[in-house]
Image 1: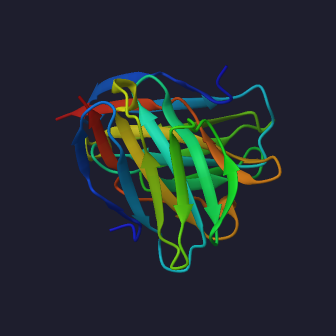
Image 2: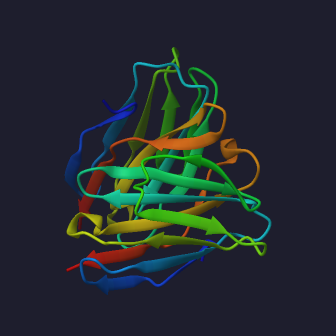
Length: 112
Length: 113
C-alpha cells in the first residue's frame, strides 16, 4: 500500500488547457513537497507546503494543502509544452531518521 | 546544474556483473540519499549516509551496498546484477533538515542485459 497516492497517473492535454493533479494519503502530513522531473533528469523541488489550507503560487502553478493536511493539489493554468514531466509529491518521514517518501507520480504530456 | 554530480550517466552491463555508481553531493550538504526509480515501483529509497555514517536503510537488496567517503562523495555498489536491477539510480543530497527538500543528481541509467 502506497503512503501517497497521486491521481491521475497519466494526463495528456493540449497547450493552453488547465489541469489539476492530486496527492492523497490516509495519514496527516506535517508538510508536503512537490517535485517535477523532466525526462532524463532528476526531480526538482517546486514547493513545500506546511500549513493546512495553505496556497502557494509559482507562476502558473498553484499548490494547495488540504485543511486536514491529508491531501494536496497542484493546478496548472494555461499549460505549456515546457510543463511536460512527472509530477511527484513527497512526504518527509521521521522515524528515527528523516527521509522523503515519494508518491506514485502523475505523468503529464502537454502537446503544442 | 543542480550541484549534485552523478557518474556515469549510462551503464550497460551483463547479468552477474558488478558496477559502481558515484555521487558527489552539493557543496555543504552532509546527507546523501540513494533512490532507485523504475516504471512499476516509482522512486524507492535505498540508503542514506550522513557525514560518512550510514543512517538508514530502505528497500536495499543485500547484493547492493554503499559508502560515503571523508570528502563526502558516495558510491553505490551493485553486484550479481539481474535483469530486474535495470532502473534509474538517483543520488540526492540535503542540508541537515529534509524539510528544505532534496537536490537530486541527473541519475545513472543502468541497463542489465
